[in-house]
Amino acid sequence: MIKTWSTPVREETRRKEPCALCGGSAFTAYLCCEGFAYVCCKNCSLAQINPQPDEAAISGRYSGVNYLEYELANEEAFLNLGLLSLADADFYKFESELPVDARRVLDIGCATGALLAYLLGRGWQADGVEINTAQAEYARRERGVNVYHLPLEKNMLEGGAYSLIIASHLIEHLRRPRVFLAEARRLLAPGGRLFLTTPNCDGFQARLFKNHWRSAIFDHLYLFSVKTLSRMLEQEGFYIEKTLTWGGLAAGIAPRPVKAAFDKLAKRFGFGDVMLIRAALRG
Image 1 (spheres, helix red, strand yellow):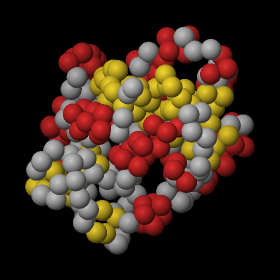
Image 2: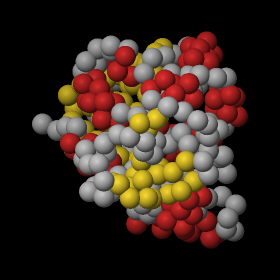
Image 3: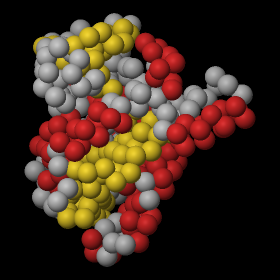
C-alpha cells in the first residue's frame, strides 16, 4: 500500500472562511484527526478544514526536497495508477478523435513528469505545472518536459490552448478550488476535457475508518464527495460526462481474493476510495 504523503501537523496562521461551495457559514463537526479537524457545511455537506491556513503557509508545505524523494520512491506505482485512470476515463477514444495538431495536454500537479513524458511519447504537446521546485526541476532535467513552477493561475498561460487538462490528487490541497476550476475552464479549448481525480469522502473506506481514513490528512484542505465536486464543477461552467470510483479495500487489510472482489464491487457500484470525474465545457 502506498503511504499517503502529508506535511507534519504544525501551527499556522488561520482564519475562518465561508464554505467554498455554497458560501455558507454554518458548520458541524465532521472528522477529528490528530492535531487538526474537518467540519461539514450544514447547507451543502462539503467537508473542509476550517479555519483555513493562509496562502503562505500552504506554499511552505511543498517547498522542500522530501516531496521529491516521496514521489520518486512511488513513481512507478503512481504512473501505473495514472495510466489505469486514463483508460477508465476513455482517454484513448478521446485521443483518437482529436486531430494530431490539437493534442495538447496540461498536467497540473505533475510531480516528476512521468505521465507527461508518457503523453509526450504518444505525440502530445505536453506541459505541466508543479509548485515544488525540486520536482519541477527534475521533470525538466530528467524527462525533458516543459513545467511551470508557479500556482496555475499565476503562470498566465494562453487561454483555450489545451484539449486536455489532468489534475490528479490536487484539488483537495487547494485553498481556493473554485479559482482553480475557473482557470482550468479558461485554459480549455472548445471540445476539451478535464480529468479530475481526488479521494472520495463518501466511499466505503472513508465511512469505515472515519477519523483514521488515509485521506483525512493535514494537507487535504477539502474532502469531496461525487455530489459536492460535481456541483462545484457545474457551478463553474462544466458538465459531467463520466464519474467513476475505485479502491474498495486498502492493500493489507484483507486477503487478496477478498480485496479483488471488493474492489470490483466498489468500481461497479460507485463506493470506491478514489473518484475520477471527466468534465467538459458547458455550452
